[in-house]
Length: 179
Image 1 (cartoon, rainbow, N blue to C red):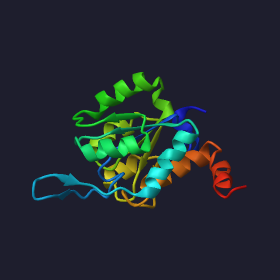
Image 2 (tube, rainbow, N blue to C red):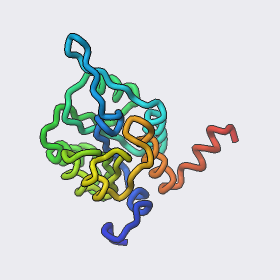
Image 3 (tube, helix red, strand yellow):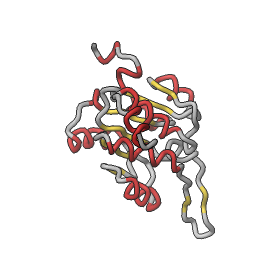
Image 4 (spheres, rainbow, N blue to C red):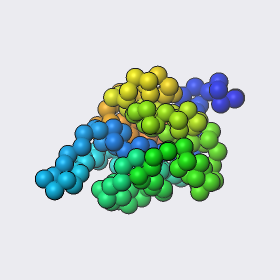
């Protein structure tokens, strides 16, 4: 089936590399600043477990984000994200580099973003996803939109979609139940 005629599930079944934005996707988009000007972010543990489950079935993960943050680098290390691009002004350049590094095609990539800086990459990947709180122009161009907001389970939702589409979800669930 040609990529243009695939359903969201069909597209998700081909993903070998899932790419995420951070603010508004892994987080709720809010930025907390200390008196010293440091930024704080809050991450959802369900999202983190979803990423770890992707890794357990061989799906690589990446972050491409416009901001530079030690907090994001620490979270990426903790989750074992395969690739991390921070401080990126043109996400398409990072995406092109990522394709080479990961040795995947655009059709084998997924991307979850929430705002206009994500659109150029979302329009190139085989599977584009958005959290419930994404800008309407982003949601309109996504193949799948989460019922959850960024920072509140949207990443976990897309991970579950990939796991189901690739026939791993039930096996992982049985393993978690001790069956």
